[in-house]
Length: 120
Image (cartoon, rainbow, N blue to C red):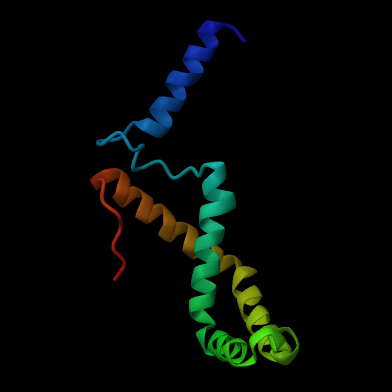
């Protein structure tokens, strides 16, 4: 790769990821970077799945707090229930699409205003 093509690639990346009104990227660009696909969106998925499974996660947390070091043995049933619930949400394609769409809206808001998105 020559110096000219490297400079062209750098300029292209700067336009893609550094443009927009505040220099945070194009607000209307809905392409996802690798870190967004592999880290940020799965993190958001887990957080939302845990929130949706609150009724089975809370008994597991209580069991662990009451069992101390023996929680591995005493809380198997509660752990299994919470894992099944969370997995069911994580495997749901509609849920993944909804969270991805939500993430893109938050990113667009940030790229447009420079402020963190405040959820209702």
